[in-house]
Length: 204
Length: 175
Image (cartoon, rainbow over all chains, first blue to last red; front, side, top):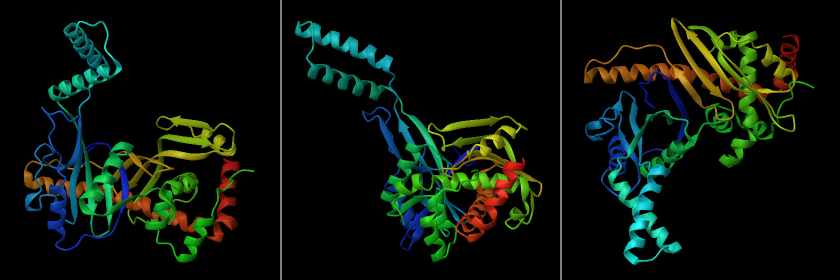
């Protein structure tokens, strides 16, 4: 989901904490050390990490390339290899038959079946290219606000984990309670009341 | 602050009351919105509203779809004790228009279309284009933040019990 799309989904976050100076250098380091790793032609079936907003398939964070005016703009990329159940079944059946022919037996033990399955998945993972999903992110550092361009639960959870790992800052998702607590400028007495409210009945 | 997972469930009603109140404001008192945008033209209900009634043993869900759809069924749902759980809104400011769906329990925004911008013809243009898009996203997100903050302050004030609830009840009953 992109900032430039004709239709966007946005999850809003408040950033808890600040980065030590020099800010841009430290953010660059956090991005570089957690840049997406390519997994094509390799065994892993999933990879996630930061990538550039403008060049998501050639991540490069040098020269403050992620700084746009007062904002930091980059993206979370999640690459995943999808092996369909039917493809897995086909290759598993062929491989299992081959093993049985080699051993002269008509069956495989549970453990052997498990090993065959793992072997087939590894073999297919090397051959199948990963499907990339790219989710843009806008970070207003001054206001400690992040907009993440996806409402998908898995993508948001990946973002929260990676952001904490990269910058040592936690992201607090803005939903009704946190938005009231953190973004509504409440006084102490208003906060106390917020803790005690219960649902309103608009009808008898 | 409460544990986040507990708070999400516990205050789900707050987001749904916000959307229900917002529909009331759209129908009855758009002047409030002018306080947050000097170029404000209109905030309208768009092509989808979802209502949910959790007062019943099995939660009842009513979805109204389509441009210019009749909202009578929605009012009926409110009369039975439902709240708005999701609403599509059209926001107009100066000559510009935004459309999006807002979900009560998460305050997540989806299907957000912002006013058209020019396209980037060179790398140098991209930064300008991105900043223009950010400005347009920020405009609608700021409005929502202000409206929610206004609602929360009203919600914890005596005026909620003393005045606002009866105004909303009156609107529901007379619609």
